[in-house]
Amino acid sequence: MYPSSSILADCWLFRGLAPQEISAVLGCISAKQQSYPKHSFVFRAGEPVTRAGIVLSGELHIVREDFWGNQTIHAICRPADLFGEVFACLPDHTADVSVLAKQDTEVLYLDMQHLLTSCSNSCAFHNRLIHNYVTVLAQKNRMLSQKIRHCTQRTIRGKVLSYLSEQAVLTGSTTFCIPFNRQQLADYLSVDRSALSAELSRLQTEGKLRFHRNQFTLLASAEV
Image 1 (cartoon, rainbow, N blue to C red):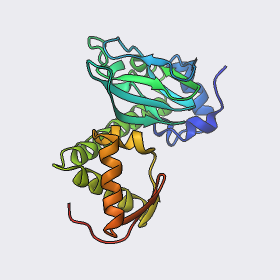
Image 2 (image 1 turned 60 degrees about the vertical axis):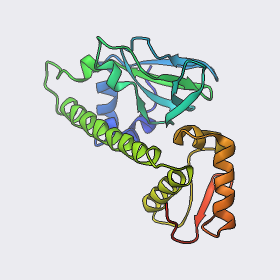
Image 3 (image 1 turned 135 degrees about the vertical axis):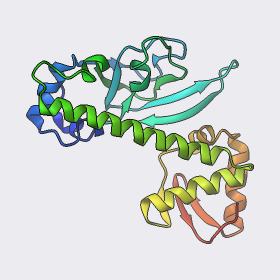
């Protein structure tokens, strides 16, 4: 039994496919559903990954852990997000990040070898799926470049303002919400949480921005 196509239709991988085409292609690529309880690992760094996953419900964090167990967030995956697709296409390599369920989470797994090989009927929707997959890879490469740009700023202020400036541009508004709480933002930017909170307070005192929880308003141009 496959999940409702409503969630899958929001996934870039299935963009442009009709509901009946999505149902057909799930069988073609041997899709399987699996559940993960809160705080459990979907997979850990160093483990082989044989399938890509789509989040159906819940939330996953893609994290990198150092020797002492400190985590840096690389990305957050929510319903309709695809993850693990790069590792699944590299069968001779293991994952270099871990994927952690932050909530009870349902995942739909896809066989990437079947996905990247056109079926015997050369169906149009399978060809569309391959095209969409290339688009997903391009988008994720862009997101990684953005993260690198933020994290390579020399100061915490620079990292914060780089990230918030980008969010304002993406939303087209000086007031916006970010998808991170304070600890998650600190992990994403690879900074200490206390230092991050102190820098945000200074920026607010200087009249550069206002914030409440994860909502921010940029008030003036701020030099990095």
